[in-house]
Length: 492
Image (cartoon, rainbow, N blue to C red):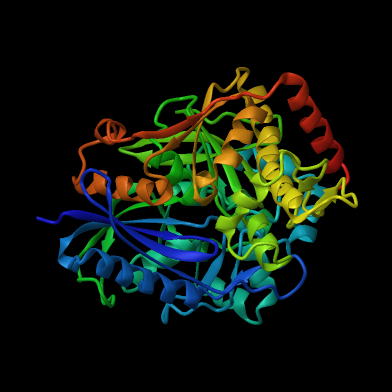
């Protein structure tokens, strides 16, 4: 009897694969980074073929690290960087252009044109989303308009569109399945949140032909089986799909209304479960689908900060003040505070609740005494202060304060960041024992569909706390941080 669930976690900077046993313990893992492509200022692309080959490498490395045969894999779950847009030839499965990444701002003018036509309120009503280059719809439009002959081929039915989950599912099944789950569909700006289907009015407004769209499925069901994949047996069912942030919310067992998590990855993403009804935000957040399981849809409020871990990567690669991301906490701890330095990490614009694609990063308060350590500490504080803006918007939408916040992602290992986050939010910050919650969420969704696990109640019982961080900063000090932060954001 198969003993493991394989989760494919395809992220912005690397493709990863993690093997979970029945107790949700990690049995093996593999990963491979791939290129980040910057054709112009503000543009971000990936080679979709590199996404695929890095995924295959990660899967092979994962199975080898565990000493597990492919026959021991019960099922596969997929989680992915969301909004990143790929168009490919249906016959050959080959991409027709580099993937346009969620961070890419090339469609800012198109978004401004949609707002200029007065379409933003209706788009928001139908999708729950802001009109912003972040989302997939305008990226599809750009590709159709700028790759010669592509629009004609799309109308002829020769071209498929998908977010990364859809692309991987298509490849894993030998081209036989073209589908996406509701969580990813809800991030495209083409999906009606209330009717739970592609929307003809949206498709016309954005100039996207229906022929390119994938079939929309739930987040936990049997979509198809593997076929012709090196390192994997044919016939392994693929049973779970969710966008990375929704998968992390599921992996954190935030199954009840009001439960929330923040994932610190390339960006920072704060999601709260709002139950079986979509809550329209009036404070700059987006409303989206969390997951669909057993016919039941769960909605979430979300605030996205586009840059979090990427700010640390910039300190490493751009300024070279650390050799590895793991050194940032020790460097930041070497000083008592940021020395008055404030870092707004708006390197690709400001996300929720500001939605200013034209904004750029700002570092304020530099003096002759500023050191690399002060800048490192300011960067960590900037990551946390972005979440302050998001959480306050969330509390305003819901009309109640948040008591605790579960955290995960790479930077959740940084105790200094999490303590400052607890201080600035005035909330209990809880880190789980399994911080790979994005991959875990995909595994759980797949495992529930395949019968590997019984239901949500069983997997909730397996969630365990590692450490809690309690607020300890005085109110006046918090106010000081917030004031300096807001002054700096106004300059971004």
